Length: 255
Image (cartoon, rainbow, N blue to C red):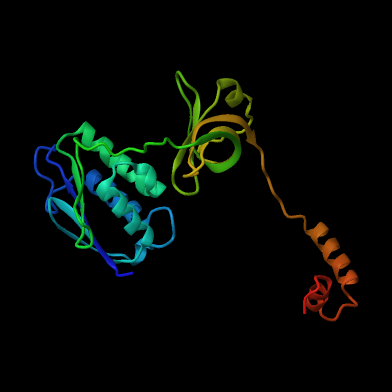
């Protein structure tokens, strides 16, 4: 397929001035850049954001991505040109579109326009559009073990733990004061393992409405003496085998 050149433009004058490359709130710029990256990449591995060439161009604030090769992105853009059903597109792009649509509904001046010479029409997200998934995401209750850093613990009315996960996201886990009081160790700003119950989004893998079952006191250690004993046993068992790899292949019936 031919490489795609795509322009994603943000229009907004709600700060009291028109957002342009020359003047934009830092938080808006940061959020917009992240959304554009997620929209281009999707949830697959077709697009490596580190290799995408972009230019910040006028059109209030617009990012132009060049030489993008992604069949799934082309498919989703074709769907978005003629349908407001986000259930037909990649889950990560759906999440970005939902954020943009929510922002446009909240602030009438907020608009997103997606255009390309390869598209038949410009895709616009405004307060008059209604992009949404016609079929809701499927969620199931699961139990999971999660690992992360406790960045907040407790609460005046609702006790919960804020866990920073390895991917940088924060998971809020509801708990109760008795579980926190029962812990003999202070977990704040430490890496912990938790056993939780939560809702799992089947398509995106996102966890929500998490509830703490228990802190898992996981303390792996290396027993050098046990390792040495096992190594010695292995050397004795395999001592008469000239080529262990060839011996395994024969057991498996290979050549």
